[in-house]
Length: 441
Image (tube, rainbow, N blue to C red; front, side):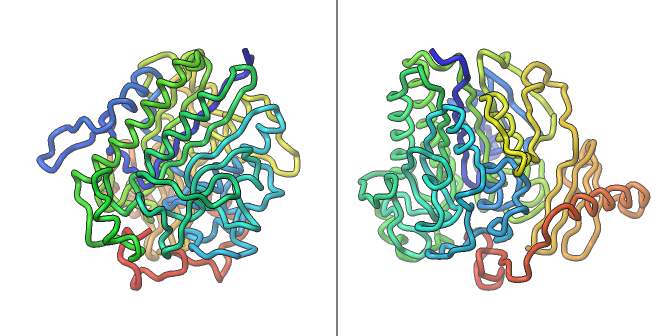
């Protein structure tokens, strides 16, 4: 058996902080709903982090950070909010020559696979297999129809490595079964990284029973006239069921004990999401747009039933997996993420450094340190004490000008170390907020 851990990193798409049973999911009558029994079990068996943050309030920038372990702003493609669904672009994508989580683990002897969403540029210039994944099954665009497997602009988008393939079935189930297949093929002699990046619960809002609705909407590119909270919860439950199949496969193969399984979301929730007690949603640097569910299980290293309020970012898990897997980090591309392994032994451990964000959309800036948050949005400065005001309702900027100045200076210092946002970068993937209804991406 391998002496190094396996890694399964599961990324949901547009999942709100309180959309799981273990984080407070509620139905239309505000009653608890049993939407995620397998993920709730995963949390009970490991560590649930209440202050997990995504690197961005929108999808592809967070994925740049996850793939590189670095501030996404270091790469041109991450300035797009998100990358538009346009093929053939030679600039907007993850450069194949840039060291990545799968390429570095692959060099360290890991088997690597991505199942699901890429959204980091299109072939032939960009792609999962160009950036270190040895196996790929999924789609390149920001989202796909769950039955037609078409992207937002109508083109078919389902691939097995470099081959475009036709498959019958509900996308969430196709991804779950392919992930199970990958685990079933592992011998235990070689460690592996499995990235399972679901499209769920991203629009269009379709359950396994909604093939007819798919036929109605598949060519529209948007689904602003559909969905419901019940549909949304069923989509999450379908994803959770597939995660249960995957966890069962780990058990059957005898691999569960020394496999780190991480579950989180690429950004905060949107139309049907529950982000309580936070305000804001996807595209906002308010807590509802960047605070995400975060669960980690590693029976060999993490005691069951742990809960931590240590703030962390998506890219920290990249640093954690690279460190735990013994991967070398090239001096030319040092990591910005922080190795979170001390948290596994001590839930009270604190991550060093600041958590910071910026977005062209609404001119947003944010920085979190020691429970205080600096937020700049639409030209206005805000200061919040998240320890007592997680909903970000009491702006303390006038009451505590000194603290506001300190946090603003920290943000400026952080920002000065990064390339500026290019003038031609686009929010909403090249569309304006006036052209596209909120929640389209």
